[in-house]
Length: 111
Image (cartoon, rainbow, N blue to C red; front, side, top):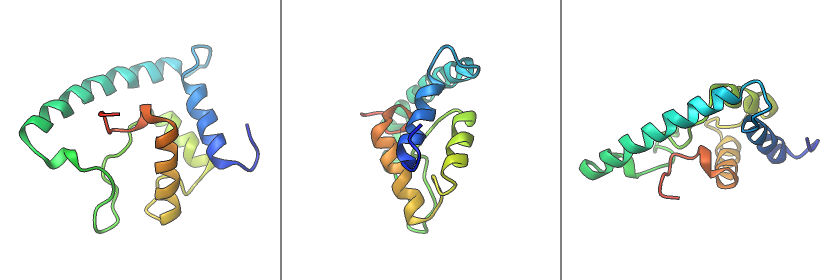
């Protein structure tokens, strides 16, 4: 891991979760399967409503569903960077940077 570079540390955790040699690899595979199911549901919803087409944060600072990841990955990311995905400007910025570098965790299926 890269000491002092939070984004590199977060990316290392995400990369490790996808390694078949790790203990939680099957959890990652289960999450990936459910993500594919959710993607299909979201595509159907886009056909009938525009509610799911807007991504990001609400006017009140609450997070909309912009990311999906296995719980064990999220817990490790929050341990490395406690501000990750919080409702603070730094937390939002870090989450969006992470999603740009790791689009498989983004709920924007059009990428």
